[in-house]
Picture 1 (cartoon, helix red, strand yellow):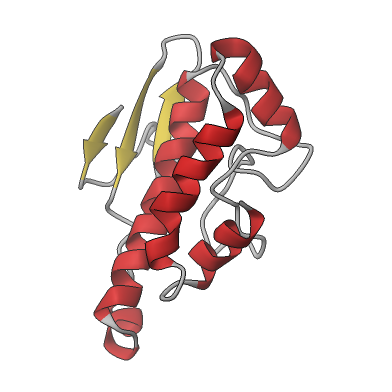
Picture 2 (picture 1 turned 30 degrees about the vertical axis):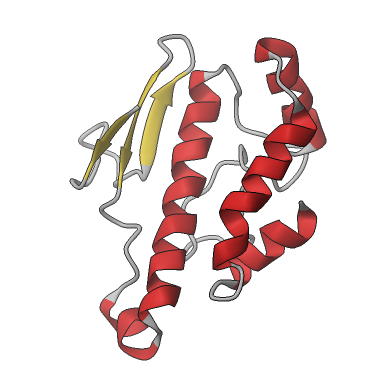
Length: 143
């Protein structure tokens, strides 16, 4: 997964994208460019909130693109990490940082891993931020 601070425009006719991955090529790219809280948010929120917000937004996009690299397509079953998204400002339903049961089963079948250990590890990563971020709090409550 390539990482950049530049906007990504895959085609001249497209608007920007947060990330892009190839299922068949197992390669992808992610941009931090539009994940940083805007000036208005930074002025009225704490530094810790801004950091948590950046981390949540970035993780959501990176994990989504990595999901594509592992063969997952966009989810149409639930509001999971693999549901397509045009960003918080565009869509009212925020994606989670975890997979739905359907996508989790597909990934588990494809690569195999200890689901309980994986979710326990995710919880350990998310918990330090749940006091600053309602998004992390929501994901911790699920896990």
